[in-house]
Each structure stands twice: as structure tokens, then as C-alpha cells.
Image 1 (cartoon, one colour):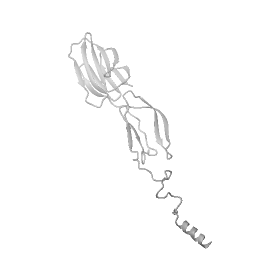
Image 2 (tube, helix red, strand yellow):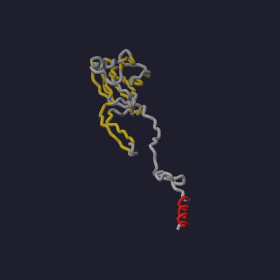
Image 3 (tube, rainbow, N blue to C red):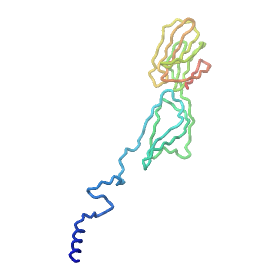
Image 4 (cartoon, rainbow, N blue to C red):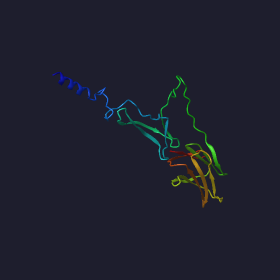
Length: 213
């Protein structure tokens, strides 16, 4: 009996017991074992989106993000704001924020003055970001829009014999070029624009005013 007990003890001590049964041994691989280590991702600074020249209203913004559990969710924010396609759209996280001072006075917006871009003895062109005026005493016969490139064409009544006129506008104006050509009984003014627009024309005291839309 004693001899049998000794043999059993020897067999038990020869087994390769694991010190901690809650972690895999050196010869085992447990694919379900994980840690709290998080891969490093660069923080958001600023992303830029440029709109085409046909854009006029920003209807909504959709952000797609990933949660802690790995699920991907999209969140849509309805806006419906007018937008200037010349300016880029920024996505950023503003640390500190541009907080408005309490009781700060909000100054009313003033219209930007028109700048003279071209002038002849019988017609002149003045413009700002969204408007241009053709200052003349001549009657406008017609006006219409052409594309490729995008331009507004205006015909004015006048019997005149002049050389063709062309001027590149070297400014930040939405007008890139102005052309003037002579025809029988009228002359034609062509206003070349920097993108796609619709326009509204009104007759003013000293000529015609165009607002780009």
C-alpha cells in the first residue's frame, strides 16, 4: 500500500502544471486575448473642401465617425445657408473657441464700394464682389448669358466707329475680362466672369446695374 502511494506521488509531481490558469501558456495561442492598448491616430486639425462654381446653398453636412466599439455611424446636420463658392469649407475642432464677448456691439454690414475696372469716353465699368455697373447714357438693346467661358453680353445703341477693345482684369474681381466690339448701329460689351452665375439687371440713373446670383 505504501509502495503504491509513493508511485502516485511521483507521477503527480512530474506533470507540467501551469502557474496561472487565466493566461495562456508559452505553447498556446489565444486569439481572444486582448489589451487596452489603443493605436495612435493623429488628432483633427482642419480639413478643407472646395465647392464648384455652381454651388449657391449649403443644404446639409454629414459626418461619418467610428465609435469605441468599432461601429461606424453617420450624423447629418441640416443647414440651408447661402454659400460663396470662392471660399473653401473648413471642418475643424476649435480649441478655446471664438467666444463672443458679452454685450459686444454688432456693427451693421456696409455694402462694399464699387471700383472702376475699365473706362472709355462713352461707357465705364465699376464692380465689387457680387455687383457690377455699366455707366453709360446709351440705351441697352439686349442682354444675355453665354457659357464656355461664362460671360454676360450687352448690346448698346450707338452709331460709332471704334477699334475693338479688350482688357484683362488683374484683380480679385469676379470679372476676368471685358471686351467691346463695334457693329452696325450698336456696340457690344462682353463681361467674362470667373465662374457660373445667374444675374439680375436693373436700370439705374446713370446706366445699368447687374447683381450676380
